[in-house]
Length: 376
Ligand code: PLP
Image 1 (cartoon, rainbow, N blue to C red):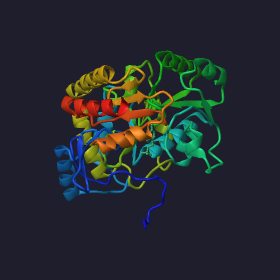
Image 2 (cartoon, rainbow, N blue to C red):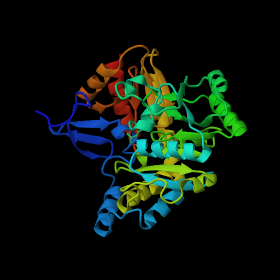
Image 3 (tube, rainbow, N blue to C red):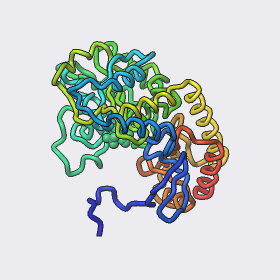
């Protein structure tokens, strides 16, 4: 009889070991992990540089309160904002917390309350982040939600233009909706958002919790668009499995988060920062990002060449999806697991493909072979 709440539903394989893209269960069965712990383990499991960073830092100092200066935060913040229009970082422990910080920042900075978000978005499970999320199944039973979030259809320029008024503090969105079906922001929508934010002085919050830190082939996914967000939220890949979140912001936001306005006990502790620094030293290398782009093109080509044409390949970089029309994907995911490939869904009808950013072409070929068998 389990002593755990049942909020994760029926659990799957019990994984106890991992190295690179390969993980192993309690029975010694090996799997290709094309979930990366849902876009987290970007350098693969047990990457030697991360293991070393944790070992070294854990012998020096794990935790100090944010009452004291934590030098690692400055190092990681500088790396995150270098060569961007962003200037400052705040560190926390998760994506939801980064989004809470963003929502608080937007309200306090503008003095307005209204935030526009989009259908099928996912921003986390805390009250603010959940209220921003455009999926009723996430809200069910937890109301009343935080007020003043308006959820609009995604990629719908007309609906957005019709809703904008002087009460709007911010527009908040993902560049690719990860949980909601691997749906990318269209170039026209990005253009419209950029114009509206410029014209009306509305803040743009881009939730890069899933798309950030190299996942789409660039440091941040917004870099592939015309958008220049005022606020960017990060987590997942930033810690590679160690809980790290961050909110980045432009220079003009500095005074809004003055002393005592916001905080966290664990966020940005020395151990977390040492891990994040090590991740960024790898992932933000131009050659690493170029390799993600090359591997992604290879993956897309192999999927298109091997899957029946009724499936669509969606997404960018190594945040890819196989759209299965109206077919539910849960049984495909279970079948792939039987054959040694771990996958995750994105909504009911899309299979999400999120291998570590270090995945090899051979591993991709093996995964495509399994996908071909189960989808035919
Ligand atoms: N934002 C996005 C885009 C996400 O994909 C997620 C998690 O899946 C979150 C926020 C919430 O992150 P966390 O689970 O770390 O709170």
